[in-house]
Image (tube, rainbow, N blue to C red):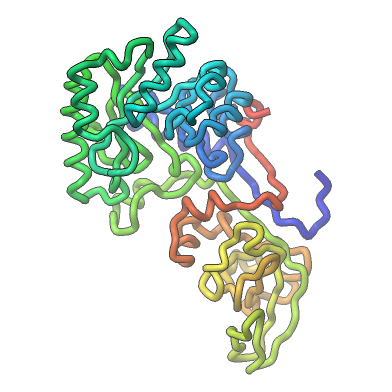
Length: 381
């Protein structure tokens, strides 16, 4: 793709992503480490991320929707692909034809998938989701009890594992973690022949009692810290390799006098003579408006990397930065500006916006020039 000089660049380090996957798997050597690649691999491109992970040895992938699973199958023809939302009603034949494996959360889903197996005259793969405290998806206690007492509803299905989802794993000391761990252990006894899957990214850091047979890391693969800031020193230990580097470029720099305003609403008032740089990134690119007057950026100058504040509102296509702390020669038009990565931690930027790293990643826009790097790119080609 031609670089016209005004387009922001989103660099995705596939080697760092693979290193994160290997690190997480290494924390539970007796478990299989899968990968959650829903929401287009958290905004980074499942068509590249999936093959890179497959080439590294990952064989099990998790997506949310049936349409995501069908799209991923084209990129990862030989992987096991699980649909966390279960089979979309009416799509059972297409999903079976693509050899996809839905996670069944309701008696209705179980019945529909079993009916498709009978229609085809062969067993179909699936997993079972039992709710243990999230109260979102999954069989209720009563529904799971009925299934355990009479598993005939599963006839025609090849159930690979039973799973549940942790609600508070990012807070290691939250009492619901142990409650869910104990409930899930009880359910595994009720389904003794099935493997188990409990740990998401943060759950892996909770220890061996949460690991079971299949790990489901998501956000940590993409470089965001899975633990809440309140986790203290444990959070530092869970810091992941940086995968994403988003860089905008300066379009113009202007001198602004004391008392003048910058941007929409005239909400940012300059307190002293300043230099304001305009950068070609905005909320239409997924750079959230919530960072208006709160976020920051990093510019590499001759004296090192300098952090500069966002001055005024994030608009549709532009942000403005106060670059007064930099030498004028270090922030001329065309100068790259780091907005995520490159000295701006994604979780720190998310906290400035009052949100989480998940949201910043998954709303990354399509106008960026995406550049994939690393030897793992060969697997993603």
